Amino acid sequence: MSRMDSHTYKQAQSIELDEPLRELLSPVHRWLNTLAVRNHSVHTLTAYFAGLNQLALFLRGKKLTWTRCDKRQLAQHISQRLDEDKLALASVQQELSAIRHFYGWMIEEDLARINPTTGYQLKRSPRPLPSIADVDLLTQLLDQERPDTPEQARLWLRDKAMFELLYSSGLRVGELVALDVTDVDLSDLRVRVTGKGNKTRIVPIGAKAAAAINRYLPHRNLWVEHQDSALFISEKLGTRLSTRAVQQRLKVAATRAGIAQNLYPHLLRHCFASHMLSGSGDLRAVQEMLGHSDISTTQIYTHVDFAKLTQVYDRAHPRATHSQNEKD
Image (cartoon, rainbow, N blue to C red; front, side, top):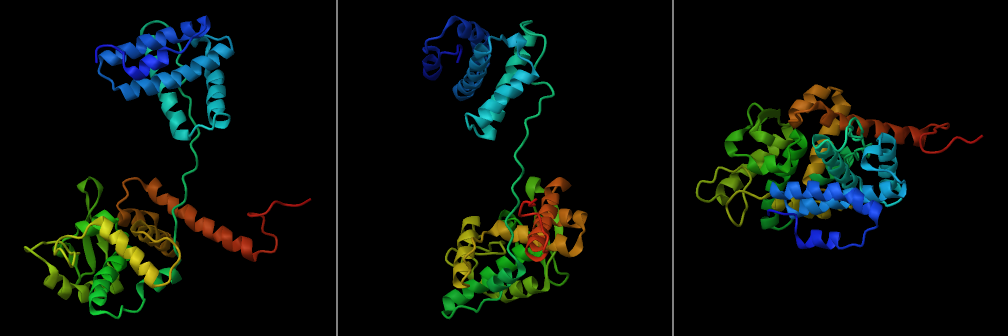
C-alpha cells in the first residue's frame, strides 16, 4: 500500500468536517499516510484514526490544539472514554498507544515539543483472582467410584491418573498431554515437565498420583499404536491425547461425581498452587513447581488465600466489617 486510500479510511474522510476539526485532523492524515507507505495494515491505520479522531473531537470542544493538550486534558479525555463512553480498558489502551505514537511523530516533525502521554499511566483493572475448588470437592472428584462398564472403567483409570497428576504437580494441560512415558519416574516420585519456552523443570509427584499412573500403565501399553511415546493415550486412536479430550473427560468425570461447579484442567493447577501455598507458605518453591518465570504471577495465589480468610472472618466474627459497611 503506497497511500492511505483504503475504502474504510475513505469512509472516515468523507465525514463532513468543520474547519477547527479539519485543522486538527490534517497532521493525523499526514502521519497515517506515512505509516501507509511503511506498509502498516489497513486495520491498524483505521484503529489509529478512530482513536485520534476522538481526541480531536475532545480538543475541538475545548477549543484546544494538539500542542495545548497536556496531561490534565489527556486524563480528562481518557476518563470520558472510560466512564461516559463505556469503552473497554483494552480499547482505551489501544487509543492511548495511537496518541503516544502520533505525538512522537509530531515531535520528530517539529510540530510539537511535548508528548502528553510521557509518564502517563492508565490505571489497570485489578487482575481477577483465579477460581479455586476446595479439597473436599477435589476428593469427591478423584475418589469417586469406578464406573460399572468395563470400557468406562478402563477410561477412568487413565482419566484419574491425568487428574491426579494435574492436581498433584500443578501441570498445565498442554504440559500434561506433552508428557512421554520416560518423563515420569515413579520410583523417585518426580516428573520432568517441558513448559513455556521449552524450559524443563522437575516436579514432585504425589503418592496417590503415582499409584493412579501405575494402575493405568498396563492399559496404556495395550492401547498404544506405532510405538507412540506419549504417556496419555487415546483408547480409540492409540495416539497422544489432545488437550480438548482432557477438558471433555474432566467434565464427564465431574458430572458423574455429581459436581455442579465448572471444572476445567487449569482449575486443578490453580488448586495445586493455592493449596500448596496455604500449607507451606513457600512462595519460591511454588513458583518453581509451577514454572513461573516471574514470582508476581505466583503471588496472585496469596491474594486468593487471603480472600478465603476474609470470607471465614466475615462469617465468624461478630464485628466483621469486610463484607458490610459500618453503621453509625
